[in-house]
Structures are given as structure tokens and as C-alpha cells.
Image (cartoon, rainbow, N blue to C red; front, side, top):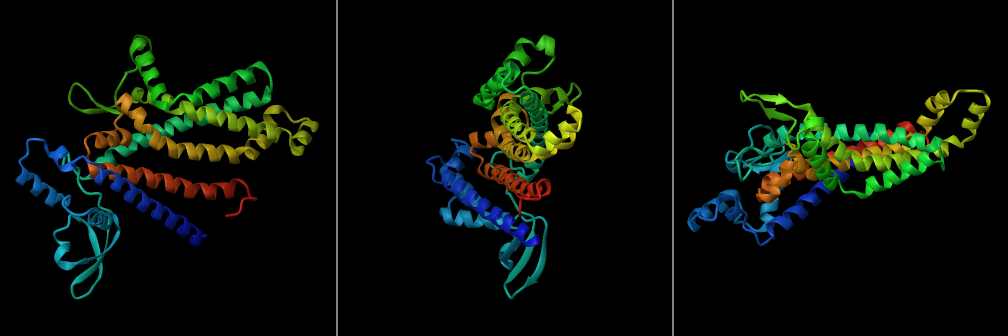
Length: 351
């Protein structure tokens, strides 16, 4: 079991390294000068050169990547003379040679070019908002998807079945940002006097006294817009799974014994139909973390999606790379956990 976990995590780390190489290559090899864009067009050349040297932007691409890998790695073997000059606030020394030290530290995501704040501190503030948004969207999508899928399966080839399938196809065809714009304009602007919902706003907002207060209503429209496509997919998958299970011999036997429909669904149908549904839900949850980028931008919902978009627009390289690494890490962890959920739900699945 442990060897399997380590193997999955090793593949995950390799994937993260490939992501860093790919994104870094795209950013650093682009014709845009990040130092000039970051520090302003009026900065004189000598000051610009000093800024580039301080940020390591004057080094070749492979050297910049090597430095970044050194910063994000939790394990390092560093020369003693260079250790004090690095911005590692917390590290533990394991052993040392004559001129080098072997240390364990927290991954250092560097500092934002725009604000000078530590990237991890900025992500730490934004990430919970995105997780709450993604959890809310996937919970809503799972609840409605399974409910409508069951209704469609129990009314196979009837009007309600065809109607739900048509609506689900339409919902899946519409991109999340289009749904977000539609809901923001309709319910947050045109019908605001009825719904009381805001067109834009974060989970935490400043009140008239300058204090941050929780505004839960700002979660409603982004969660619905983000959950529209998962609802459509879960509905169709659950419908197929329920139809397949309803035709199994043990369900027919339960009907012959006189069990009520609710009892059959609760005791036999739901549990034996969960595997494909769990696959869809878990996969969509990971996707919602990245899909939230567009929805958060529309609603100005202050999560990691909006943070990433702003970092991209401002060419804030450390912040952009940090956000991408965190999202990719969650995607990998979710897929690792998913393997064990499969095995728990279905004993026939071998790890």
C-alpha cells in the first residue's frame, strides 16, 4: 500500500516538474520583458539592469529554472556561503560537509513582482475561497445530477426523461464563463431588486466601518454558474448507471419480494451505481479548480482563479507559477485519492 502511494506521488512530482518547465519556457521565452512590464516603462536602463540582476532575470533560462527548482524543493544541498543570502525563513539542517549543508525546508514560492508580498501568503488567502466555491458547485451538481438522473432513469423514454436529457446537453454545451456572464447580468443586475444578489463581489467584503465581513450571497451565482456543466454530465452518467443497475437480477429479485421502490433504490441501486458517479464527481471537482478562473474573473470573486488571471495580465511570474503549482498539486492529490475510493466502493477493482 505504501509503495503504491509513493509511486503515485512520484508520478505526481514528475508531472509538477514538467508543468514548471513548460510554463517557465512559455513565459521566459516570450518577447515581453517581465522586468520592464513590472517596474514601469519609465525606469532607466541602469536601474532596470539592477532589478533584473536582483530577480535573476539576467540569467539563462536553464539557470533560472534551476534556481526555481531549488527554491520550491523541500530538500536542498546548498553551499554555506549562499544559504544566508537566500530568503528561506525556516529550515532544518540535517548534516553538513566542509562547505555545504543538507537542509529540509518549506517550498519557497518567492515574492510577487507587483506587490512584494510572499506568493504563498497571497495564495493562502485566496485558496480557501476557491475551495469553498468548488465544493459548493460540486455539491450542488452532485445533488441535482443524481436526483435528476434517477428521475430520468425511472421514467425512461417518457417526456420527463427526454426533457432532462435535452436540458443536460444544452447545459454541457455552454462554457462556464458564458453561464457566469448570463447569471451575473440576469440575476445580479436586471433582477437584483428581486434576488438581492450582487453582480460582482467576493466571499469577504469590507463594510462601512472598514471591517471584513462574510457575504455568503456572493457565493450563490458563481457556484451555480460553475456547477451547470457538472450537473449535466453527472445527470447523464447517473442515469446510465441507474438504468444498468435496475436491470440487474438482484434488483428484479428485490421487486419480486415486494420491497418498495424507495427501499430498492436506497439499499441496492444507489450503492451499486456509485463507481461511475464518483469518477465523474471527483474528476469534475479537480476541473472546477481550474474552471473557476473564468467564473471568478466574471464575478470578481477573490479566489486563486482571479489571482492567477491578474498575475497573468500583470506578468507576475512568481505568482503565476505559484498558483499553477498549487492547482496542479490539488489535481494530482485528488486523482491519487480517487484510486483508493474506487477500491473501497468496488472490491473487484484492484489497486
